Amino acid sequence: MTTEPSFTTVPAPVVWLGAAGVMPFAAAVLVLVAPSAGLTLVSPGLAATALAAYGAVILSFLGGVHWGAAVTGPSQPGLTLRLGLSVLPSLVGWLALLLPHGLALPVLAGGFLAMLAVDLRAARLSEVPAWYPRLRIPLTLVVTALLLAGASFLP
Image 1 (cartoon, rainbow, N blue to C red):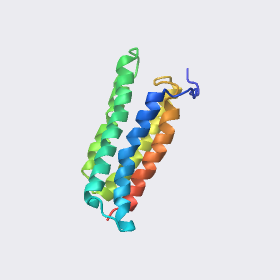
Image 2 (cartoon, helix red, strand yellow):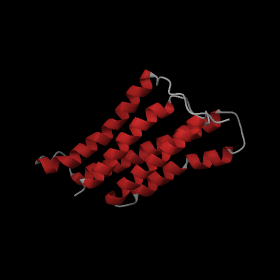
Image 3 (cartoon, rainbow, N blue to C red):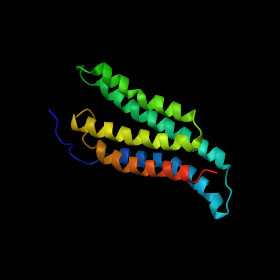
Image 4 (tube, rainbow, N blue to C red):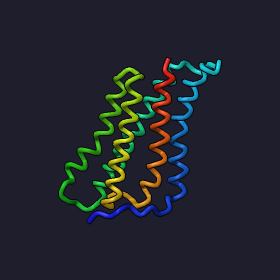
């Protein structure tokens, strides 16, 4: 039975940790923007590498959420598929790290949007907490915007 997710209250520690998780994305983008403001804080190449690496790590983490939900829930048909799909974000993140930054950052942004679609489906199927979309939607929009902004400020 599928129902629309109930947008209940997100636990406070989840909100704080989720918001804190956005800070490295924002910091890396600020470093990429700084030269256009006449500031040089860190090498733009290092900032772009940091942004891509952090994006790959967090994308992998989002896949891990689904791995954890699958292995802790009741065994059901489709478990193998759920587990297989849960490792795709790690593979996309790894692939992105092999690409030039100008391609890596948009690939990661696409990965975050794809995971949001997976998360929304999982919430409808009660595979994740009902509050999960309320957390993931704004975080995904901000992270995607930051990744694309970072790509636009690459040297």
